[in-house]
Each structure stands twice: as C-alpha cells, then as structure tokens.
Image 1 (tube, helix red, strand yellow):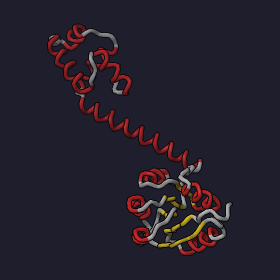
Image 2 (tube, helix red, strand yellow):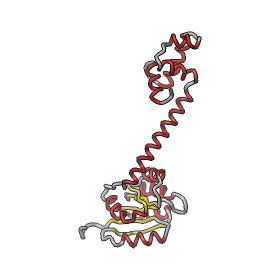
Image 3 (cartoon, one colour):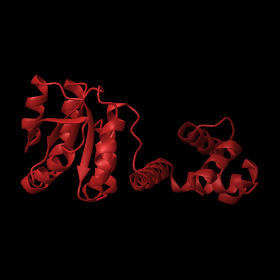
Image 4 (cartoon, one colour):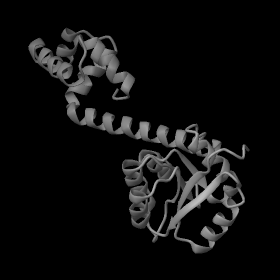
Amino acid sequence: MESNAPNIRVFICEDDPDWLRGLKSYLQKEPDIEIIGEASTGEAGVAFLEQTEADVVLMDIMMSDNPEGLWAAAEIVKCSGARVIMLSSMEEKEMIFEAFKAGAVDYMVKSNFTEIPQAIRSAYQSRSAIHPSVAAQMREEFRRLKQLEHEVRLKELKNLLTPTEIQVLDLIEKGHTQTQIADKFVVSIRTIKVHVGNILKKLGGKSSKEAAQKAKDMGIL
C-alpha cells in the first residue's frame, strides 16, 4: 500500500455495539482506511451523511428488528456520492435483491468480516466484485422472479381466454381447419371465425396457427 495514497473515508451504520466495536478495531489496523463516523440508526446515518462526505458506507440491513438499512441506503445513494456496502448476518435472497435495488454496490455477510477491508477498497475504486456466494444467491433470486413473472403472465392470459377459445386453439394447434372445428362444435364457420378473431386480439399474432403456437410455447395448451 502506498503511504501517500489518500485514506478511504468510511462511515459505519450498525446497531450492535459489540460488533461495531470489533469491526472498528479491525478496520483501524488498515493504514488506508479512516473511520469518520458511526450511527446506530438509519435515520442518524442519513443525517450525518447529508452534512459530511464519506467514500464508503458500511450499512447494516437489520436495525431495530426491521430492514431499516434498505431505506437508509437508498437515501444515502440519493444524497451523497458514497458507495454503500450492505452488511447482514445471513445470506437472504430477498434481502440481497432488495439491497442492490436500493443502490448498494456490494453485500457482505458479517461472518466474512476479514474480507470487508478489500470490499471497501473495491467499492472506493468503483470496481466492486460481488462475493461468489452472494452472486449465486442473486442469480437464483432473479430466476425465481422471472419464473414468477411468467406464471403471473400465464395466469392472466388463461383468464383472458374463454374455455371455448382454448379448445379452439388446441384444435388449431393439432392441425384442424376452421371448417373441421365448426363441424366438431356443431356451429357455423362464422362463429369459429369470431372466436379466432377474439383469440388474435388477446394473444397477438398474424394467423390462428401463429397464435396457437404462441399459446403452446407459453404453456397455455
């Protein structure tokens, strides 16, 4: 470490006094890191950083038995140029996802405290590398949300289509012509064309076959 390198100004927001004491003691051994302040609530942390510049903020997610750190992180990102590293006792997928949505650049599990100094340097140099276990959690959470989004969309489409329209789509997908479908349902070809028109409005597509393929691909059929 170069002796003439500027100190990284670090602010800590943590409501566990014992853990805070230990973290400060550990970080103070690092020649390039300067602890410029601390707070035990998110509100106090935001107030401090509205008046004082910090380079990196270590923000505990859970304070006063609620995820106050998420709100505080979002406020700090808006009111200052500090880069926020979230601290937590556990790797919770939902919390990790929300932390990055709030504007955090990294997420550290407290048991990995020996990695915090390097995380601070990476954040300061704007090249934060998310811990592999956290990255894996994030990928899993994104997959879960994508699947949930697909299921919601599928349910919405199924609710839009009537049972008869789904039957018509199913027969079209299986290769039946509109005339054959009309004969099967014992209705006029005009009635089937009305059904097809309604299906195209709901699902999109240039033809009934295209709509049927789309319905199959989405899992409606």
